[in-house]
Amino acid sequence: RPNIHLVERLFASSLVALVSSDHPRKLDVCHFKKGSEICNYSYSNAILAVKLNRMRLIVCLEESLYIHNIRDMKVLHTIRDTPPNPKGICALSPHNEHAYLAYPGSVQAGEVQIFDTITLRAVINISAHDNPLAAVAFNPQGTRLATASEKGTVIRVFSLPDGAKLFEFRRGLKRCADIQCLAFSVDSLFLCTCSNTETVHIFKLLEEPKEKPPEDSSWMGILNSTFKTSASYLPAGITDVMNQGRSFATARLPNAGLRSVCTIAPLQKIPRLLVATHEGHLYIYNIDPNEGGECTLLKTHLLEGQSPEHAASSEEGAAASDRPLTQQVSGGGDEQSASPASYAASVGRRPQSSSPNEAVASPSGKPVTPSGRNGAGYSPRRRGDTPQKSYAQMLKGKSSGGPQQVAAEEEIDEDPLAMMDEIMAEGDSLPYQDPLDGAVGGDELEDIGALRLHDDSEFPPMRHKLA
Image (cartoon, rainbow, N blue to C red; front, side, top):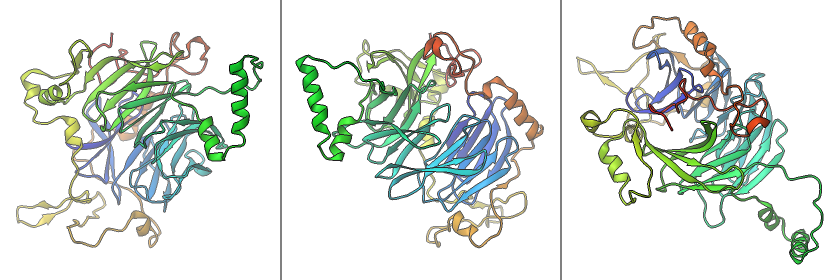
């Protein structure tokens, strides 16, 4: 499947949702272990994001959101006329009971709308930031929401469903940043974030003790008490900055400016920070859960699809004794070097036209466009044509509408519902295993287990052990 630019997987299961840059309005739902397509749907505008858990599959367009029942892909609800969301900013809680959906509520300010995808009702509107939203993320239990604005200097954490602010952290004072990812740890004790800078920040989510500690009679204790008392007379903005928390730990990437995603996961029962970059590298860092500080880079993995030339150029300038061994996941040799471009480079390409249904020349020389199963065709959009209406605008004059299931390119041998039931029956479709001794949080965790990895304890993108 060339030019894939959106991929979402249901935890560690075989269910994968794909969107290609060649057909950005078409969603393919696949069983990747069998290499077969389960179903596909066509939407009226480009798909900007896809989120899924065991109950729901969410498709985000610029001005609307579709809530599907994941088992049969039936559209349960459509949130229409949302504020323009060209970046597809949204998040879906992985928890079955607290299956909340978060999306921007304004284009001028950082408002977050929370919607319950089970009851199909709006929950709360949270005024999170003064500037528009840049990123949102739920914790695994669906009880906390992390937010960041386009300014990128302040990270906030709210409780759900009441929307109370629990934590406020300052990423930095000197410069703004483009926050690209927010992610909680399994036990919701840590929150990591990465941006267009070379620094990945980790914040520790610990409640301050309610009981007052005994007063310190030393001169430092007196000075600290005086400082806190004086802060109450300062302007509110300055007081807020003084009360904001700082990073518990940080990690430095070799290069800045690359798009990246991060997460904290226990690998072999040890908490690790994992960062994957757009250039095709996966960096694994050690975290000291007690002291924090600078994280140590343990390994660098070259993800599948990289050309040796690109890999060599990205490693120039690093001393051999200072960098960890880079391991290629699969392929290699002459077969790998024959690839003219990396997979990461291929997904970076975008079509010139925003239309997902490009005209195809027929033997007679006339353009032909693909049509759906119901025979409804699409007109190709050419440069200079009147801009296409948004789906929200189109719905205003129609009593019905929505995604249309289109015919599969190849005949599906198995029943799609049976394939979905098979996937949901697998343990890999669950977000977490039973608690493991030594995982993040240790024996104190009674209802939170380690992240479910591959069947043979490998991290999903890799084909070798992490030892």
